[in-house]
Image (cartoon, rainbow, N blue to C red; front, side, top):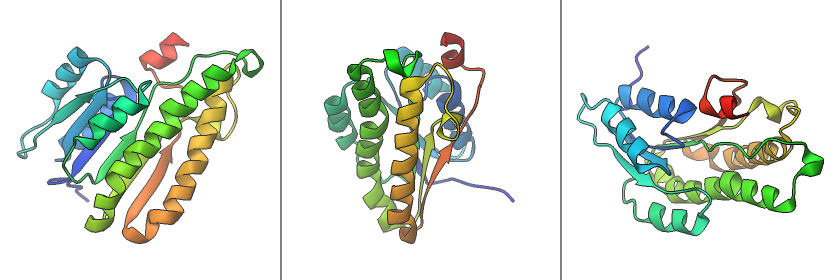
Amino acid sequence: MELSLKNKNAIVCGSTQGIGESSAIELANLGANITLIARNESKLLNVLNELEKSQGQTHSFVCIDFSNTEKLKEEINLLKDTYHILVNNTGGPAAGPIADANTQSFEDAFRMHLINNQILVQKVVEGMKKEGFGRIVNIISTSVKAPIPGLGVSNTIRAAVANWAKTLSIEVGAYGITVNNVLPGFTNTNRLKSL
């Protein structure tokens, strides 16, 4: 079976390294037009130049730091395309025991992971409904199934994202939109090296 995403538009978050970058490259290889989202413009330009264009694709990027939710809303609302694929992927919160985490750490992680996912979904879901096709993929963690020691805030927030996604999937499934959570374990990325 050969999968083609020609004429499909995809947003890929956290797309300058690791799983996000690999996702963007593979979606472009399958023919999709990619909008990269990350906070480092020079890295965005590097990935943009790596993306496959042999099927007439046009690629773009939005340079935004996910810690600024209001700025994300502004920038995302400037996008005019209908999007068929959304890959929600954001680096995790700082490591540490849950009892030592301050409430600001939870608020920041909640905003960066769940609130921003919601903003992005609200941008793409109506177009997906009209097209009768959508794929929302959330890159979370195996901590959804079993907490990982030393990642207290991350374990908590990832579980919230998983339940948000499950609720969303129930609401949008009838429109041909799937919502899936990918639960990577230890993956050789810069995030793992930083832990």
